Image 1 (tube, helix red, strand yellow):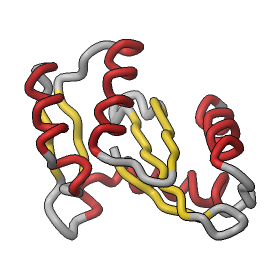
Image 2 (cartoon, one colour):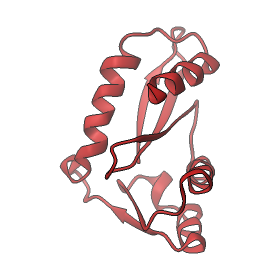
Image 3 (cartoon, helix red, strand yellow):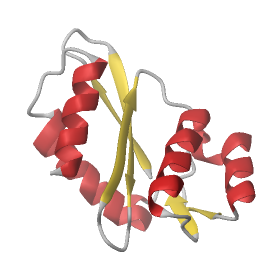
Image 4 (tube, helix red, strand yellow):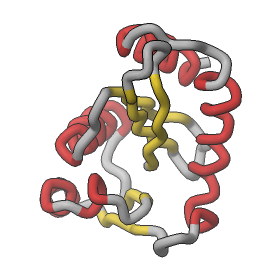
Length: 129
């Protein structure tokens, strides 16, 4: 999991939560919003557990959205191990960094999004493709 940031055409900030399966390289989710917090991350992961089953572990950086009490409780209640990359070492999570580059080059840099609804619709279509 990782976060990306961008702006809508009129300047409003947006964030995207990217979740991929490191083994199959499948993009499982691209969640967008003006502010995404640990509760949003837990909700996305609940949806993914329902759709794809429970993973053994989830790998992410040590950002506040991933290290907070909500995520700790979520992982404990689902018996899922949270693995964190070392601070300042994006190569620890090279799969997601490579995928983020594709998201940036093929989606975010190509389209001037007008609304969050448009981001949601087009990012989901891009993810499925």
